[in-house]
Length: 160
Image (cartoon, rainbow, N blue to C red; front, side):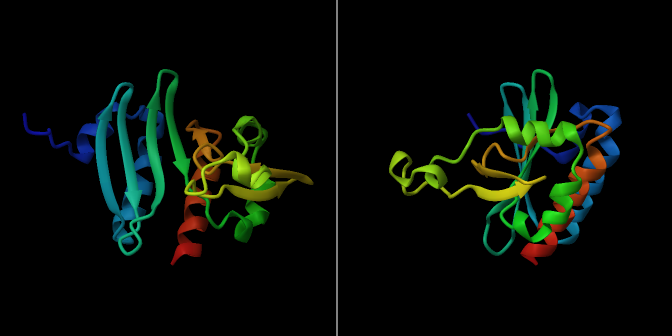
């Protein structure tokens, strides 16, 4: 059976109204920078991934869970925008704090050597060594949207 093709408009129908402008802004930024988009239908809804045209490395995903929509930002260059990390609101810092630690950073013997190294950074004097898959896996809500947008913008600037 052939695989179904999904359009961005199909995904957008599932996005909460309060987040549509944010998603459209991110999508335009990605299109303008020639990032590749990949849409997949998963158990809880769409998974939308954006990857760099040259390296094919993901910069972000939109993911649906039972309690709403999340964005996973691959903040490979997060130390370059430490000033933004220090300005993040408490709800985002709490999500980062609760995310899983990077086993390779903590003890390289405990993790597969092919696993991509996580992020080592500080917020408010506290050091974090977090797994790259869950560190910036953040719930999308009205309070977070301006900071999420800025995180994406900063990461894109550093990758350019």
